[in-house]
Length: 51
Image (cartoon, rainbow, N blue to C red; front, side, top):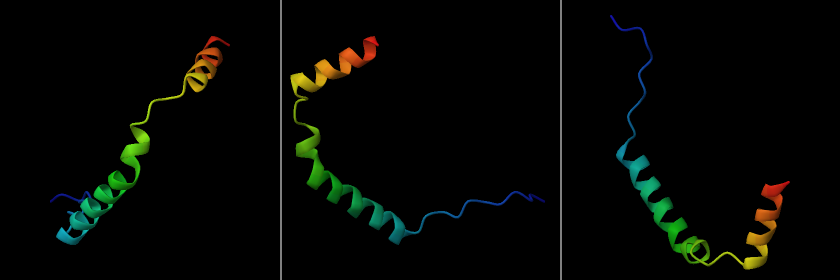
């Protein structure tokens, strides 16, 4: 007899919500995430790494 608690499998509605949320977030933020990083910011990051 296995006494370990079993993880409850996700229901179809949970999976549907996760898919809806993922698609919505991608639709809102993919354009921003794909923008190039400004040179000034890259310079600041590199300078901070050196310290």
